Image 1 (spheres, one colour):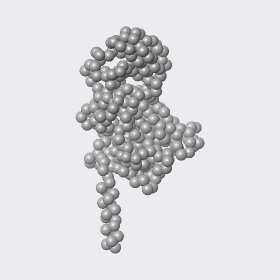
Image 2 (cartoon, one colour; image 1 turned 60 degrees about the horizontal axis):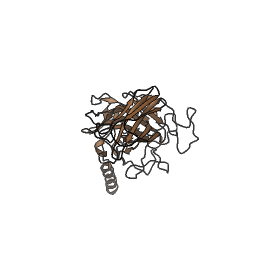
Image 3 (cartoon, rainbow, N blue to C red; image 1 turned 45 degrees about the vertical axis):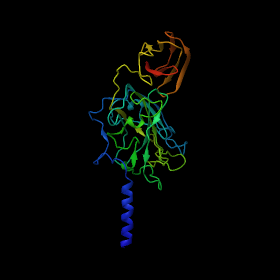
Image 4 (cartoon, rainbow, N blue to C red; image 1 turned 120 degrees about the horizontal axis):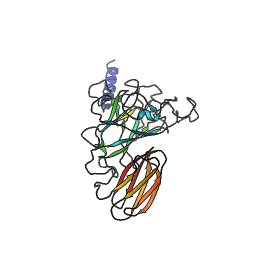
Length: 332
């Protein structure tokens, strides 16, 4: 009897030691941020969504007339957290944009909100950021949840086993992300983040499952073969916002060395692009998903380029051998 008790005690101690990260929103030491916190200075203003299957292991499964997630509208992810969501489905993605870029300040810089109905029903997602709408960098994630037994569609997940995974906290509480962790990533300006990408985690322990940054399988509720399957994105709140002090959005650091003028902005379809400075330049236009729309080569100083674009949010990038400068344009 004593031997059995000792074995159980050791097992419990081992489990406790594995809980490396902040606990759920109702416990001391949590990093959860309430949706109505005064630290939020702004919220996402644009979004595009690419929905995933309701069940990636059975792509013929249908719910609500579709084999892809269909609950909620993409615009539900714009503005403050209010529990109105857009469901991403398995491996679905959402890319959010902001009127003013996010910047790297003290502590967390933004937070992602999901609509989990309890502290243990947690649907997870990876988070990536970009300062040009093209090159995205993922926050290093870690899941210590056991991988011997599947969680199942309505199983429980302990927040203290999770790190840098959106959805770690229940509805009304945001999961924080700190850009300081990515400050040494090439091609990323952590002081001017223009895009945040949310990618649903597939909690399967099979080949279709998602892994963390340490190559561990991430065990979360799966399958969820419903119209609301996958990560349910509520909002992205900004804590530290970029303040213009003569710098430009993107990788350039001096607006006066390389200028890019776009007019009118917003536009009704026709956009004029004029460059200043010396030397030939290339112009790349991407949409809010980071997809390349148009490339214009060998642009001369002060040349005006006119392009016609359909309704949407775009990023116009001008590059030379040493700089990349970007501007956002809205076509209504």
